[in-house]
Image (tube, rainbow, N blue to C red; front, side):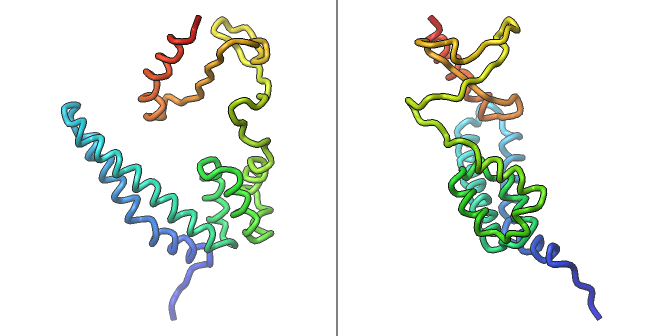
Length: 178
């Protein structure tokens, strides 16, 4: 007699088989990069490029898993994570190929909301007006800044790439602030 797991466990094992080597290699690269001295900038840059390649490979493997497991709860979970990375059109195409019962679980709600958002604006399109506090704490509508350059930068302190891009954003600000 042998004990076997559920279909969910089988799906998880299949996913792990596809991605565990990629995650392990990325983790090793990260440890090496963090141990480098600032003098090793060339080596660090090359390792980061390898890390970006591994990230793309991981994404491709997980998207492949989603497509080949349209009835798996794991697939809906992964699609929810990657929806903004792969974009609305791709997310919609994959989502519509999933089992209707899976598309009705709680994790699918965020995917449905994302797919239903207005299209991503292009340069020259009208924008959706937003209202936020300015540096003085006063509420201000974006529409009140007609005929002015507007620099909106959404970033996170936990996002290394965001912090690395910050000097460029500050240069743009300095260039156009008047």
